[in-house]
Image (cartoon, rainbow, N blue to C red):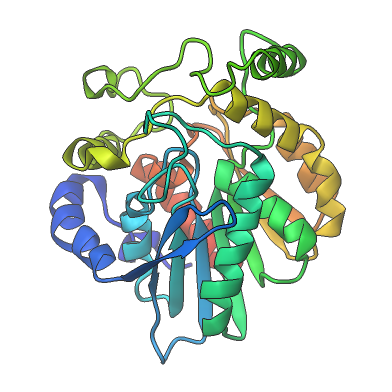
Length: 321
């Protein structure tokens, strides 16, 4: 088995390599925008090499700008992929609907799926290769799952990293959270922050308080992006975002049998953002292999080396390169 260390940035050398190599490599990508059905500009990035015979599409999670995946993209630079990545509406460099740019907001979850489909059709498909692969994280995994249920054979293989199939709404049950968010929407408070959520405040964004990664260097990198480029920062979701995502994921397991693409689902054993129950049932109903990383927080691909290296090795073996 090939060691993942030959294609991943180790934490003890992270800051130097990330700043001097990974970020410049990402910034060498071509970029553009598409205008979606709502009239919003959506930013995307891509790198196409005439010698590459396969595509990789990356679908980020909530709050995540495309540039956050600079390390993963750098890891994959010699894998023979043309790489495509989209800033979902309302985050990254894509358009936002509300005056407060820190609010994570969407009118309908289906708009994420429609945007993703437009990105695939207008940007990825014209560079079509024999094989097209997918890596999708969290909210990006839920978006991609809905897309794949309508386009069951588009992707050759797909990796879902801690997909947002069941939000952790603790201390409330999911049904209570859904009803309460529905009440807030019906009483015209859907564009307000969800309870106990607010704008991104760098001084409150500390490693000790974070619940998505145990890697200090990778936490630092994400905070660096949000503080150096404040327009990328995103705070808490709105009540409508919560409501739409709870609705979109309530019956997501029913989509599994419709998807013909072989799936690899990466599950985080210490996830505090999404629950595992629906991930488990989803994988049981489709062509899906589930791998659990017992010590991982939510962002498996941004975790400490011992977890991240194993996940990257598993992805590499699944994709066959």
